Length: 236
Length: 222
Image (cartoon, rainbow over all chains, first blue to last red; front, side):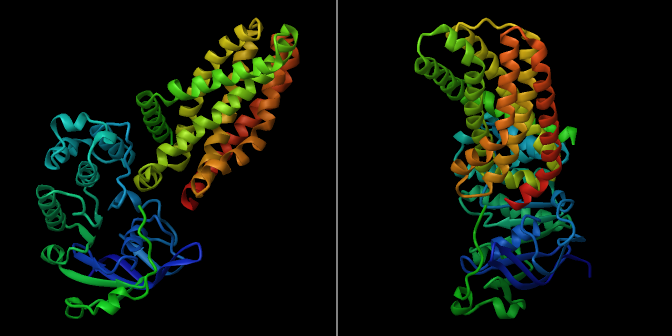
């Protein structure tokens, strides 16, 4: 089975501080995987590594056929990261931010209007400077960028955080549609029930490594295992 | 690369146009500095004229630092730097784009400052061609160095204090050469400024080239 993500004993560092400590993980193309773990377990670091933002210090990591030890640059236009930050500019309007993101990533502009409409950012909001938008609207904008870009690998870090019920439902729809169209999704979330309904598989992370790759083992992971060995850091 | 440079420059200029930071903060700051220099030197017209070129370029240097810090802040506010990396934009294009936007803002500032300095320091602007050429080349150098070391400092937690320490020593030759070229132009000895103009050209080309090549590594290390 072709893999979208394949990590073998991958180590990632921030200075001398370990973010990933020998993490091994395989995700098949088209799979939707729920990443769970305590704060600082390494979920965000894994997603950022998959996006090519954090280099691999040891081990191997291949994402969408790109070896992260050799080539992270060309991977980046194929993945979409919904991180803690929105990568937006406060002085630019919602639609200007979206247009810049799409032009920068050489994505089609044709899907921009539909993405804004879908995320409830059409009408007056689209002309509003991001600095005047609520946190939820900024989150919607970040998701709209991904929807318009339609990446092959979706890296979603707490995608429901800060969103109202309507937008949370849209997130669920987007994840399902991404999977239906052959996309691969890694979804880090503390909302276990919601994520369980969306994902094919659960992967538990603690101490910067996968501790329970099998579904049966992770349905009710021991608290001690989840809390142990906080090595990751939640950034961006 | 050029597509990416135009995109980034357009974005930065649009942000500046909306925020008016340059107009409302950098320009008034520079004018106050010019005025304070004038007050410090006193009413002696001869002394003011002799120092006009140096005071002008030191003022430009200080204002440039503010503009560079603003350019860095734009990219750090909402992890825009990561956004640029994730977009797959060419790093050289990002460098050229940000440098060009910064240079354009500085050139506008220099025009305003030149007029005000001429009035404040009772110094007629002679040798306009040499003055303009000096501004273009020196500004290119200042913008390239500022963008380069702005990216270096942005990767640290002490960027506000680190940036001047990195920036000022490196651009000292630019300030020196620009001051000499302007002094020559203002004293109707344009020929004496051509050598300094050459130095500015070499410096600017070198730093634009270094930045274009090395900016990718800076972005990744930040």
